[in-house]
Image 1 (cartoon, rainbow, N blue to C red):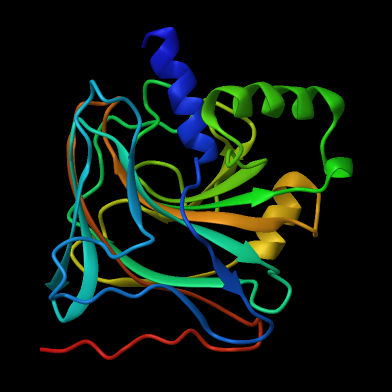
Image 2 (image 1 turned 90 degrees about the vertical axis):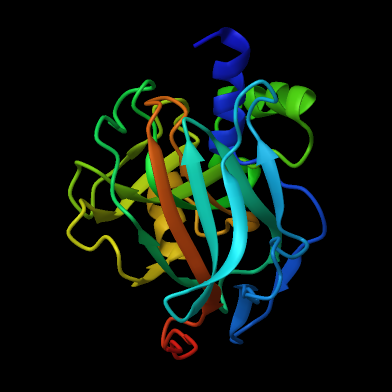
Length: 256
């Protein structure tokens, strides 16, 4: 992988946020990813962000999939994020809920290596951190990164993944940058072909990964990523929303 593309992977691993943000309120259910099947394209402020214009981009479209209004992501040796900005305070609604599905997992991916940094499905959250949560070297690196990729480059990111080989609960830094923390939420092909419901306490996760309970969310992204392995994958994402710790996730009933 050339130097320019490698730098771009680092930037995408940290998630470049664009557009106007939804503000997370205290204690309410905050819907950040509700999709209507009659809309072929993901609605604003969701935007596709490509890693490299020379490389094929993962394709995203809205569809009804087994009774769920969802975004379908299709990757063929490709990578692009579908993302939207966030803002506000996670203390009131720290739990991210969503459902997703994959047709299958990748054969040759390995999250421990750069050439294996591919996933059938990912959900990302990017953050701003207080200055005292980062050492001088980290702040300097981020300053350099923002001079190249823009002011919206986050300080840190969580990446919840559907992996092919590592067990559920595995956590490790991204192969490209320790400013992105990988968390395996689903693993293997046993649950492929069905909608799976997920619930993660984002505030606890970011505190554990980056040592601060004062992280501010800056963006949310979903992706299917196969550019390193050259494989093909298809995944779906639906009903992303934030709730309070003591509140249930809220998913519409599946239709026939």
